[in-house]
Amino acid sequence: MSKFAQTTYGNKKEILKFPDHYVNLAVTVSDAGITANADGKKIVPAGTILGGGVLTDDTKDAVKATTADEVSNAEGVLFNDTDVTHGPAPGALLIHGFVALDKIPKAPTAEEVAALKQVTFLK
Image 1 (cartoon, rainbow, N blue to C red):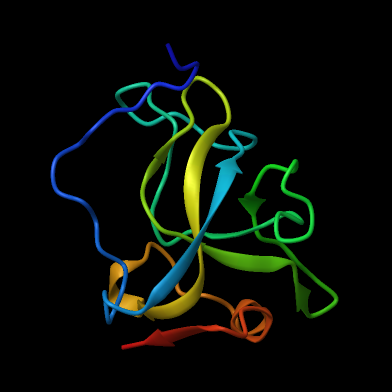
Image 2 (tube, helix red, strand yellow):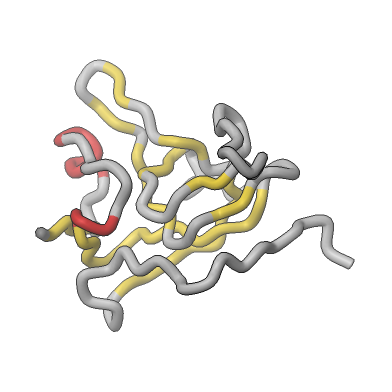
């Protein structure tokens, strides 16, 4: 039995502009700083910009990207909603592809766009 619980919420949220051209990387999504919703679930929404050094060290957890001194540590975009209610959980990090801006929870900053060299955000 897996230590990770998986909950299905119905239809998959699609963040891609062109769903036939993308590359994802398996990561562990951190539960740090995530607040529970009205149902008591901690959900990191698809389209969240993540970083944390996961591209160079796969033992690290992916965390929400931060920007300091006009430089972002963004490394990718969370591909699916990820439930971290019971702690860090497996997720998929989009590192190459075309993301629809109207399908993600928050538009990326200029620093995040610059850091994500192989991700293109389109209207």
